[in-house]
Image (cartoon, rainbow, N blue to C red; front, side, top):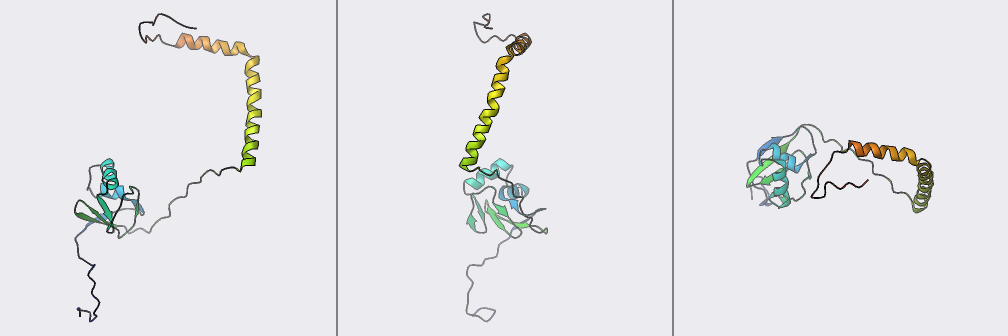
Length: 157
């Protein structure tokens, strides 16, 4: 029997010392906690250590760099323990609107409409070749002479 008068023995519990890492908001990404705790010199080093399997969260090896951590999560890295501490309540992550894929019928109609719109534009440019030619001359004048090799003296157009 243990001190509480029960035959149940809790052999899994051990007592450890952990460094408290206070954060302003939760959830927070794992690599950021390692940076805040000064366990690593930078974010790149933190991400590398995580992907290589050197970091454990709540007793399990973690390889996701952006794993969300909350108040009370325990991180083990380099034989040291870090405890996430946050007084603020968890905030919901903003849901980013993903573009909705069109159904095949609608997609075909949209493609046909785009083709119709582009055809008149092509026709307009064919009717006005003079306007198109003038900007090319201006572009040629403004271009600095660049020598790319032994044939820098030959100019086309």
